[in-house]
Length: 360
Ligand SMILES: *Cc1c(COP(=O)(O)O)cnc(C)c1O
Image (cartoon, rainbow, N blue to C red; front, side, top):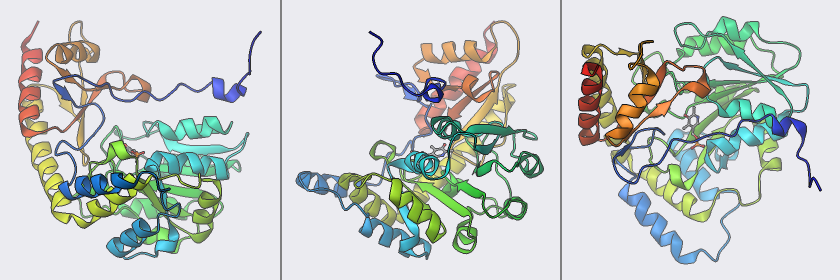
């Protein structure tokens, strides 16, 4: 007996591996918010938990209204998902079939490739320049089979971003039957003036979709809430393929409350930025190569020397109760990604990195 056989393209998928958990110590492997979540979101969650017998609002009406108000956009052109991950999956379902192609940049977020593979489509990787997405390289990958271009801006795991002018140039270079997805998972952290998440483009262009998430700055990763904003036709397509109750009621309630708590968002961004500004030079002073980051993590490159490689650092940090993320799956085997933690956690991280640098 062999049992049921999945489609051959499904068997080619390497399942996504999340950051490892720890019983104690510091988990800095999944870009989670070190400040937790808004107390108001917690309260709303507990209140919603009193009525788990009731189905969620399948259209996430109140959440879309709140998002529309917050961002000054039309709630009818928003769709919510169980994380932005689900939105990507739904795009695959709605737009991709075997033989199609998607384009992402070389060290782009892993989930885009999974989406392509599930549909039997091909994921084309556009070479990056200095670990940054390269608009000309992406445009050079376009063929008549291209259906979606995914751009995480800023990108995980590189921490780099593409200035808004360049994003506009990318869009101008694409046929209008190609969907440009601007994944703004880290948009709230970016301080640079030449950056924009692309909400305005998603409002005006027929083929630009922006995705956002409650997992990072709002600290609600465990609840799985994300959303997308874009042209009516794309939003309509996503609605057709989503599960009728894809975002649960606790997640919706918490997300609405989180949106109302600006002070938590400000505190999270301020904490991140001051800690980024402290951690990067401190690590560089110890001799590490650290890439510039506008996100809530740093990409650190290790020497290619016995006892000093990324895997050695990983083992050393683990022995001190610190877990960070290896980058083999992203094609960056010399690097590790370190999420910005609490001040206390970061102090321990710096101590551990210093000890590793000095160890022989
Ligand atoms: C974390 C992350 C997301 C968010 O995923 P959710 O499914 O919303 O939790 C999306 N894109 C990138 C690049 C990320 O790093």
